[in-house]
Structures are given as C-alpha cells and as structure tokens.
Image (cartoon, rainbow, N blue to C red; front, side, top):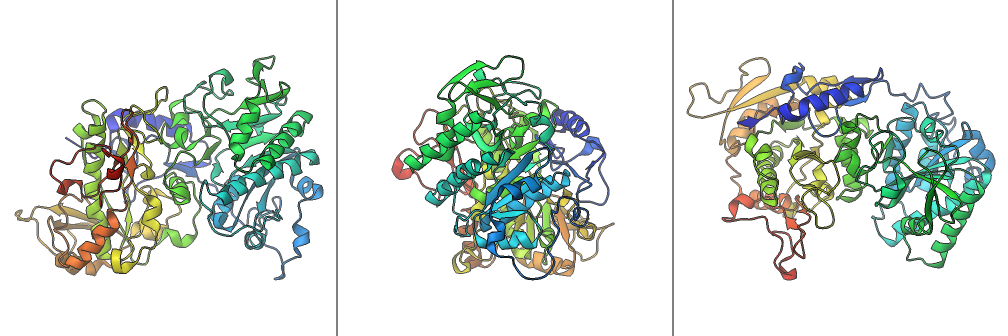
Length: 613
C-alpha cells in the first residue's frame, strides 16, 4: 500500500483541528497547486505534517497601508541621503518610536537585509510599529532608510557579507548586542531585543505585560516541555541554555546591573561567547521562586527577577519545525527562531520559506524556465511499520532520495526549477548521540522533517563551477505552490504528467493532452523523448509528474552525467548520531542504490570519516 495521502489516517485529524483552531479571521486555508482543492480526506503529502504550514496571514499590511502607521515603510522624499549624524542612537530617537514605553529592536549587517526586512514585515503585518533596526554597516543603513525602515547607526563599520556562525566576526556581532542593551536601558524604556533570524507570528507585547515584576524575560533552547499551556517555563525543570535571540529587558536597577556585568565579562575575555556569558551570570544564583504563581524566579545576584518564555509558543527551530509543540498543545505561537538547523544562513532562510514565513522579492515566485514538481509516493511499510531504528530511518529517507535524484535530473534536462517534495524522517537529527528522538521531547515518528536534516541546502545554492559540476539546478521549498505569494497566473499554467507503462495501449507519446491539462508519458523515457515532448510546453509554468519512479532512463551524454553526479552527490549531508560509536554520524549517499550491500553505518575510523565520493 502506497501512502500518497501521507499518513492521513494518523495525522490528518490532528493537523486539521490544529489549523482550524489557529484560524482566526485574518488567516485562510490554502489549496494545493492544482486549480481545484482536494476534499480534506484526500489531502496529499504537501498538505499534512507536523507543523501548521498551510495557514498564512491573509491580510498583510501593505506598504501603502502603513505610510501613516508609525512611519514604517514610508519612503523618504527627495533623493539625498541625510548626514550619518542624523542616525545616531539617542534617547529622543528611541522615545519617538516607543509604544507603552516599549521598543522592539534587531540589528545586523547588509548580508542579513532580507532577514531584517522579513522581521519588520511580520511586525507591521501584526500592526506593531514600535520598532528600530540597528545597522552595522553604512550599506545597510542607507538601504533601510530608502525603504522607510526606522534605522540607527551602530557605528560598527562591519563587513557587509555573511560572517558565518561561530566565526570571530560572528562573536563580535554578538558583543554588539550587549553594548546596545547597555546603551538603551538608561533611556528608561523596555527593550525587546531580537535576533534577525526570528519572526513574530503574534503580537508579543500583551503577553510580556502579564509579568510586570520581571526584570528580564528570556527565550531558551529547552526542548522538553515543562508546561503545556502558555505559562512561563517551570524554571527548576529547564535544562536548555537561555537563548538570547529573544529576550525582554525592563529598565530596572537589577537588569542594568546584569547588563553591565555582562559587558564587563565579555570585555575582559574576548573568547567568551555572548550567550555563554549571559548564562554564566544568570546561573550564578538560581532561586527561589518569586512569591506568587507567576513563574518568575530570582537569578544572577539573587535580586534579579527572571522568567523563561515557554518554548512551545516562543519557539526554537526544534520546538516549531520538528516537534510542532504549539500544534500538539493547541497553542498559537508568538515567535519562531531558526535555531537547531544545519545549513547556515541559507538553511535558516529555507526553514522560513518551508513554513511560508519568508517574504521574498516578487521574482522569487516566478521562473523564466518554469517549475517542475512531482507527487512523492511512499510505501506504508516504510513510514509506519516496524520499530524506529537507524536502518528503518535510512530505508525511508533513501527511498525518497532516489525519487528526488531523478527529479533533479529531469529538472536539469528541462531547465526547470524543481519544487522539492516534503521529506519524511523517522529519526531526529542533532549534533550528538541520541536514541532517535531526544528523550522527553514530543517529536512524533515519523515526522515531516526540515530539508536541512538531509540536504546541504547551502551547498545546493552555491555557484559551483559548471566545467566540473554542470549547470546550476534551481529549487524551491516543498510548500512553494501552496504559497499565496505565488501568482494565480503561475499556478493556473499547469500541466499534469501521468506516467504510464510503455506496453499499455493507452500509453503513447503525443503532444496532445488527454484531458484538461493532463498528458500521458511513458516510464523509462530517454533524454530525447523528454526534450521532444516537453519542448512543446515551454510556456507552461508548472509541470507536475504523477511520480518520479522509473521516469527517466538516464543521460546519453556521459560527460553531462558525470557533471550531474559530481553536483548532486554533494547535495546530501549526514544523520547524527548513534550513541555507541565515535564518530557517530552516518553519511547519506545520493547513489546508495548503486552500491551492493550498502548499510547505514558510521565511519569505522577517523580516516574513513569523509563523504561518499
């Protein structure tokens, strides 16, 4: 039995109830790429999953709507850039932008401009305008100014490129956050400080106002739930690090003291990571609880009142994209922070795209060569039968990899952008050994796993030399054709390709469709057959295959095939990690099926620890 209704029996009722629960007046239920929506009992694999990816804001605030709303998106008059002195951070600048004495701040360099614009857009879509963005380089400052985004100069004079997580420059950026907090708290305003790689899904200010006694409220890397509602985490049970990507500071004496000691600690030792420094200070003294049932506790010097935001609704990359904790607890999330992912900045961007939470420019939602998609088909036995083991996980993933490999080849052949299918996994991925899913978490098995769990998204986006790797193969996230930002013109320009057996009398190559937008096409077709038939459909925006199993016989040009292999075998990464072996990771292999006796095993020695090429 093949699961084209991807675990509908198991998950559909949970998913539908969650989506309906999370469906107030400003969100809508979106249909699949075809012109007619399937009934709920026939939702396919792109419609089901462990996260609520199929609802989006249906009433986003346009740039025109916000011209008078706090000045955000109001494009400045004239064409002359003001003097940089006008962008200095001052108390007057901050007070002008506050609401109820709260200011929401993020910062970054030009490399993160698309994340920053996305961050701003999500807030303004929620009718939240009391925000400011710190620019770490002049290029970003000028770009944001001309887009009407409230911006100030941090005077950092940083590079405009992506500096990479963990690099010395990355740590320098983190220290700027500490300096910024110390600069703004004396202004007497409440400060909601955010990293640029997070988005707001719901106005957080009413929630934060529920805890007026708190000096600091912080998010965390907690993956094991300590509460099942919207209370603060039970601090005694929190084992994850406090994450400073989302945290709220009130201008109290206690918070100012913590901020100053944090700054002094980092200045005294340049090797200390800003988040580790914060955790070190906060954990200097923990407890007791602040009197009352508010979830606050004393920390740092025994006087600071600290609260840990619930990870189910102030989500990490694990609690949102893997566990879907908010969905399982029937809660509306406030935020998602793209932590716990494996492909650097491109992986963060792709996670948000999968969840339809990233505002790309209009050209992203079209392609001159059109799009190619296919309906993945997975046997029930691979998804649901037997125990969850390393072997059963790889059997499931490898089955999907083979179909994706064929789809990549066809997309390359037809010069189309591949819409990736949803990926199903039995095992979670971490940086350390674990039994398949982290003990104490509520990760469901199997689950719809983020693409970066299996694929090296950053490598797929690299401009590799064509002489060695062939032409770039563009791709989009699996939810792309459900995204309302994709135009009706693209979605309606649609051709369904039904694979058939050559022996069948009804299976013949023809340039006429058999019905409304449908075409029969033989399995095991040659390169020439693909080119001959689909050259007639170059103007069709979306070609969707009923399957990719046995669709393509292979490249005739051996040089082209070699380049293709060189490219796609680098597309897959590792699963990590078994508990009883060092190293404990296992490499995915795009061509696993060509190696008799292939088994999912970690490298036997350090010398064997390399990708399978």
